[in-house]
Amino acid sequence: MVFGLNGAFWPQAVIVAVWPLSILLLCLVLCLLLCWNFQPELKRYLYAAALVYGLLLTNSQIELAFAPAIPFLVMIVNPKIGRDLFLAACIMFVAQFYGYWPSYLRLYNYYGPGEYFIFMLSGAVVSLMSIGLVIKTRRAFTEWKAILICSGLFLLGLALYFYAPIASMTNPPMNWAYPRTVEGFFHLVTRGQYEKLSSTAQVGIFFEQVRLYFIMAGKEFGWFYLPLCLVPFCFLHRMAAPGRRWILGLLPAYVCLAFLILAVLNPGVDRQSQELNKVYFSASYILLALWMGYGLIILGARLARPGKQPETAHFPI
Image: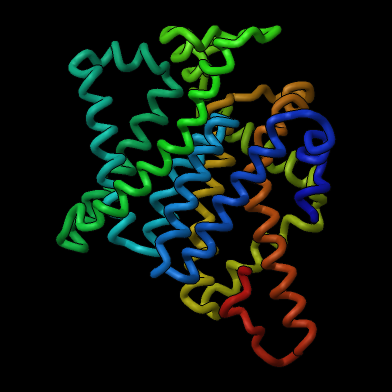
């Protein structure tokens, strides 16, 4: 409720916009991963999450920022599948890096300073996680079937993009990018009609943007609610393993949906830029709202039964 009525999402929910459907699909992905977290033997929840995430990207490509957090969310539930996801991501990073190497300037000029730093940092994290998990488990790609199924369902969700050329072959009043042609289709999918991103390239500016982000979050939710996000982390040692895994697994998701998007968008620090860009952080507000809800549940349990430990073993439902 506190998320649905906040000032960033509510104005988008009462007009024709892409954000309500985007947020709904992202919430469905999180819900499916939550179900899998509490029942790791039922991989159908993981497969369904992969399908819905593919559908999500056909509606809003800004949610690509959630992709780096998925291997972490998977790893805390099933380290073997998470290891193989990291390995697959590492292979894709090396392949893309090799495509622009040995010309360092070519790679740098293609991305720009901000994007280049994000690309290299992500690649370093993925590589280190891959190496560490392979050493720990002494295996690699033992869960290749699960990875193939997830990849296939993810691509099936992305296949909705092929509706664009079909619709383009009719006689619509507007024909954005003419996706009926091969060139137009890739122009549409790669967002060629939009201005190229210019990520934050200076640390000082980024920290100022982070400060303004928390100011916006406080205004949208109300300053009373933000401290509640810390309550679940204070009770981690009293939670059962599934609840603890879920609370900690949301951390990398929040980092990606808040700070990665912040760095990529590089919003201005003036009031007008804040008003224009605050809707892009609605996805991160979902996670804040979840932590707030869990915090309220824990505090409610403490107040209802003073002197006793709250039943927090399975509170994230």
